[in-house]
Amino acid sequence: MKVAITSTGAGLSSEVDPRFGRAAYFIIYDTDSGEFEAIDNSENAAGAGGVGVKSGQLMVDKGVEWVITGSVGPNAFQVLSSAGIKIAPGASGKVADAIEDFKAGKLSETSSATAKSHTGLQ
View 1 (cartoon, helix red, strand yellow):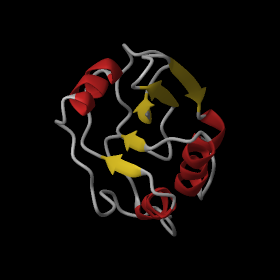
View 2 (cartoon, one colour):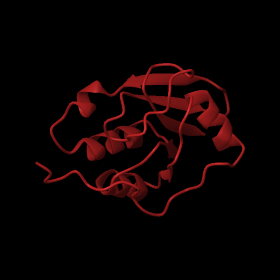
View 3 (cartoon, one colour):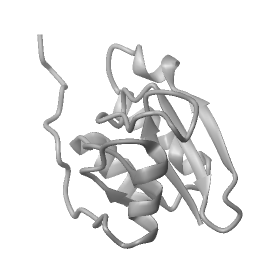
């Protein structure tokens, strides 16, 4: 199964990025093989708006089944949940630790956004 973890860097020893849409990187981890791919999200993260939707669409395009993150806003939540991607918020610490917590069933799926929308903020 493919899971995506928001990350501050390109490796498993990087910290979990608490933001979804503006995460610096996404680590796409295959729970079956243990292989991973780091995706630089700087283009989406630097955007003026719609970053949650763009980052959500990236997860859809990569065939991700779960997203592990600190929090997720309503627009990203809508894109991910509409595509059948499950979201486990509240992750922190190292990416590798978040993966182990996920495998051990310590991270739970959310049924709603966990951050407020940034749309319209000045």
